[in-house]
Image 1: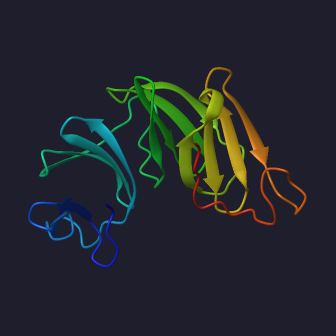
Image 2: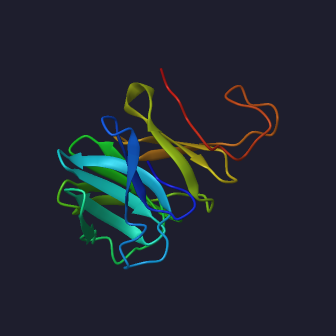
Length: 169
């Protein structure tokens, strides 16, 4: 779990009935704000943080992720597992990268709001909520992005441009 207060990463140990904390007291930074966590292997997590993207392995090794072919983008964003790689968001872009973090392709997000949540949805589409521009639907096959903004009359949702969570059955 991403932790508030001192920041960092918390792991709940069910046997000990307590949280173990990581990153908040390692001396490297004063505060880690974690916005997203994605499983990246048996003992690894891909962390989306206020300090950039990192691979956290074996509950101790922290490696900055350099996305090959995408430039040095340290902008805070969100990630999601997709097929044999990941979809990564930043302020302006959406990138698909393989499991070695090599860029497959990059798309212009078409809106300026930050992505606040992301989920795999029906029919293989990826849905993203934004801070002020409603919902984005990405069809990964066609690379088409649709934007749904409510003016109070949307059949999808009503009276809000800020979407903070998504759930699909």
